[in-house]
Length: 196
Image 1: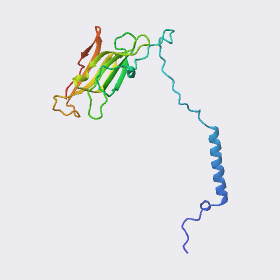
Image 2: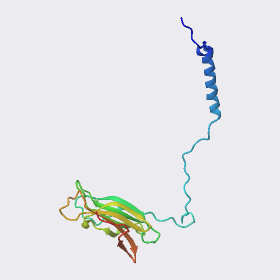
Image 3: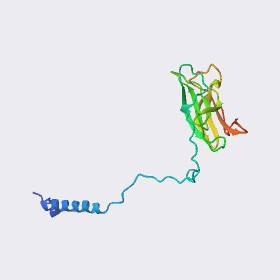
Image 4: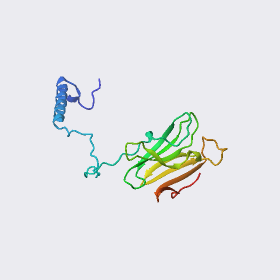
């Protein structure tokens, strides 16, 4: 029998006292962690402070008109119009928000052309109504990007260069911008507008 070069170490053998010491140390760590808990976390966020007329004692601002409650000037036959996109903002500077909706006729297949409509609320309990058509579906274009910012409506319009281009694959792209000016919406060409 060959003897090892290093003498046997006492701590390499497991004895019940070692298990007892390990269990006692682990219990001390668990008990100590119960006393050293961090403060409870909360998921509540503080809302940014805004000054509204209601907070200042004035009347609350009117809600934006509901696009679902409007009769759009579309002839969709037996199907209903679909509100594809909508956004709100004060477009005419009167302090009341308008809703701008991108709408088309429901289609079983294909890509129906879109219309862009400005909706205003009625002063009383009446229904909201369309006050301007920014893009007529008769123009045979679709809206891919759309926003209402800083009192203007911007959109990326997709169209077709000829009737021979399949309705699935528009081959023209234009950027458009509408702004309220002198009592009507004026169509502007935003900087960087291009065709594809």
